[in-house]
Image (cartoon, rainbow, N blue to C red; front, side, top):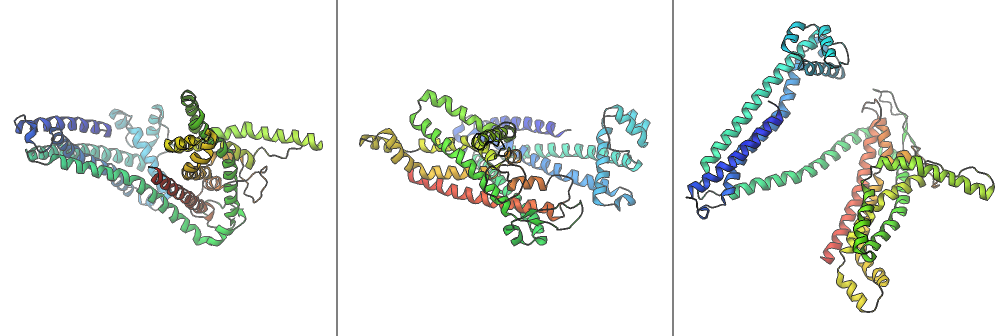
Length: 494
């Protein structure tokens, strides 16, 4: 029985348990809910939880453990010469076995009996059914595929029986516990509280897992390359090694990548901050309700555009426009129509990224300015100040901590951008201050170091994790500082 069907049956059981539990609680109370410790619905919920929760936990554990056990058993059944091969080759063999097993599921029993263990006929039969194979299967693969299917089917039937039996046992046990003074509400709320704790822990555990994985691989990198050469190096030249090689030749200086990241982010903030902040001031202080209801959603549409679309826009429109514009300007001034702005440059990437960041600055700043108490505006206007003077000397100073926090969050978003930089700024790692020339960022090099058929054994690939943990530390510090400022602002005006 498939997992979705089992979950559907458990949902039906839960509904039935809720109805039966609620009616049983009312029956033992003589139809008067005032005699019960909890409301009747809590008793029904208690029965439903006792029936479904253990079953779902068993189902989840089974789905994790059973494939591991079955795959290990199939691998142990391989011939000795196959088990003597490298783990990569064994993985390819098991992948072929899995493909054969999935393909055999579409064949009828008569076809499987007719084919027997002949790999050539099996491949022909699967090809006729539209099931492609990566290579020619060997006889032991056909046998292992059959064993894999048999064990998988047995596991599914046993899992179904165990899960449904656990649901019935849980329902029967909880049904017998129902009594007028049974604290059903307390039990249900404890389960809900535990569920909330688990849900809130997922994000924390995910963050810990990400950091731990990056730190582990970054530590392997720093065993080959000294940390001071990475953090203070001024040359980026990784010199890719062949797959399987451990040659550490190359220079892994972080400074050019870090400068490119900060430079492009700075240009983007120069574009995004004035436009976003001024639009926020207009929408919160000057715009009528009708204009605001139309302008704000249209502005926030920019935040929903995929970054790859911005990258194409920069590559095909903004970059060539700036290049041609510089050529015309140079021709008017000097008579030489050579362009001094490259199509891929810091200016192109920063300008397009700034357009992408405008809705972040505008939306966050608008919410913060709107949250400033109206009594401050009324007091300023009552003392004779104009609306512009009130905004400049009362509203903005009051909202400044929150606006600074919003700008720091926007800066962390700019630092982590990848696709716009790849298409608009190029991949050249260089140290220069000319905004009309290409540069690259940390995120671009993370992508390039992990692209291709490479093994995670050489510094050329492990450096991506060192770059990742560095970028993570930078954005984390920005976010922490921004949250500190925002919380301080909220404490002051709530």
